[in-house]
Image (cartoon, rainbow, N blue to C red):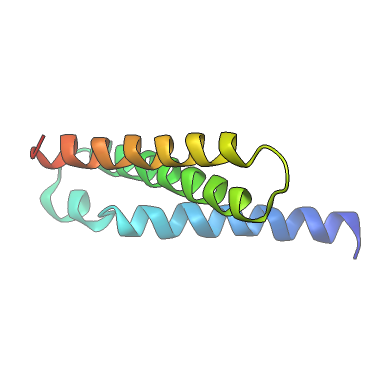
Length: 92
């Protein structure tokens, strides 16, 4: 595969993730209610934190070395993401 094609494909994956997370975190709500997009940006960041934790847990499952480090950091990131979700919804 060509380097340019590979970079374009990688870039498309990240654009797709950002668009999906923006829709998942309520992109249309500020458009309908005429409020700011701060909650959407925070929601996307929280989802990326959870995604990073999930990726690290996957790496812990397939890695031979540094398995404990990947597990610890992965679970920590997921718990941070969950904490932020509870903070945003007002349940914490």
